[in-house]
Amino acid sequence: MTAYWTTHPGPLGDLLLTCDATGALTSLTVPGAPGAKGLPAPGSVRDEAPFALARRQLDAYFAGDPAPFTLRLATPPATDFRRRVWAALDEIPYGTTVSYGQLAARIGVGGPAVRAVGGAIGANPLLIVRPCHRVVGADGSLTGYAGGVDRKTWLLGLERARTTTPAG
Image (cartoon, rainbow, N blue to C red; front, side):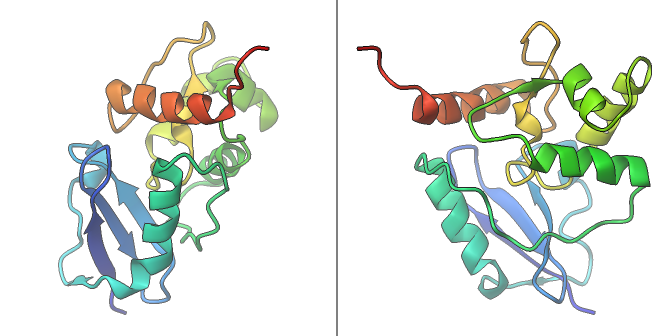
């Protein structure tokens, strides 16, 4: 089956998007992210058409629209644990953050498993769309992000600007 790819300009650089033959998004990476290595896959075809909805929703997100993404996402080969972590990421609301420990508790694990949660988050192939940037250290510090902490800071700033209301 043919896979497709495209790039999309944005405030974080040219995003690389890939999808399978059904049009389900398989990856979204930012320039220099570890997950971008080997993408696009050999034999995949550059085509803008399968990404029209993703482009519109990304543009709206970058313009500050808090509407959730409604894209079809492919499920890559992964352990059940990773799938549970990724599903928990999908539930973090726009403009909010949770700690790695809080996310671990949401999926019913704790203690040493928090490191494994961090590993699963780091393996997320769908940056921005699956909001791993909303996970922070226990003290609120911005640690770890495949796209770089500067990009994580930018994304959280965008979301907080949209959800923060002026006093008075």
